[in-house]
Amino acid sequence: MNRKLINWIGLTGLAALISYAAAAYFCRSAFPGYNWMASAVSDLSAETAPSRQLWDKLSAVYSAGSVVCATCVAIYVSEKQISTGMFRVGIYLFTIMNWISKIGYSMFALDDAGKQISSFQEVMHMIVTAFVVIFSIVSLVLLIIAGFRNKEVRGIGIWAAIFFAMMLLGPIGMQAFPPQYFGIAERFSIYSAIGFNAVLGVYLFNGFENQEKVCFFM
Image 1 (cartoon, rainbow, N blue to C red):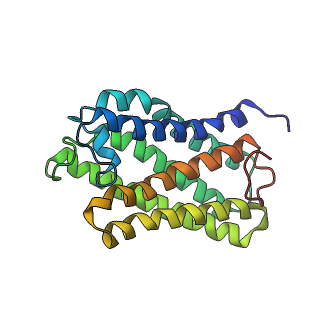
Image 2 (cartoon, rainbow, N blue to C red):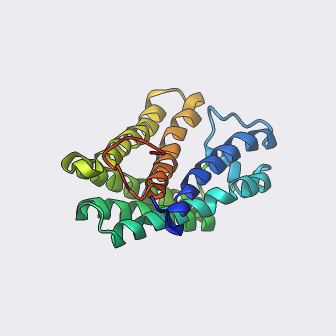
Image 3 (tube, rainbow, N blue to C red):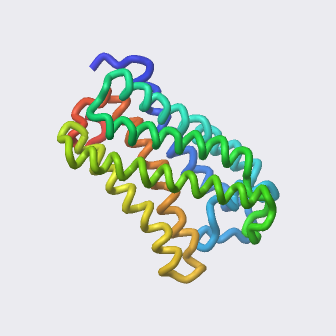
């Protein structure tokens, strides 16, 4: 296909995933005593976290790339009128979720890593999280239904189902497993949204051709 600029921008979704994974991995060494299996990823970016400066550097591509990718996907499916209205609404809600995440977590980062939620800023951080979760769930459910009903977007629907299952594994794992494994369960939920954004970015890179296939660079 003859790729345009907006198609190439889809690769920012992959770059965002790599950036976030790198920040989550390498910032552990900059936070003495941090146990990734028991602690939330957001602890690494807390205001008082010793890893905050390194986090800001390594996650810079994620911070910008996730929003840019989702927004370009929404613009593309709107202009090309891809699939059904339900499919496009699912994409739009997923894009709104990315904007809420970007703005909300930038404004209301955790005050203290691993501390009890008590201050206004920390309460607002949890409210932002609630909105992110709600928009993520609704958007993925709509995309799953759209994929089930329409063959042309079945591949995206399958990916949405996979990442939706990952998202559910997070809270289920937090309740089912001991506290020392909280961090592992939480990462399932976090990477579900970031991973799905990367998948949408690859579909955008391919111009949403072969949407019925569960594939990447084809």
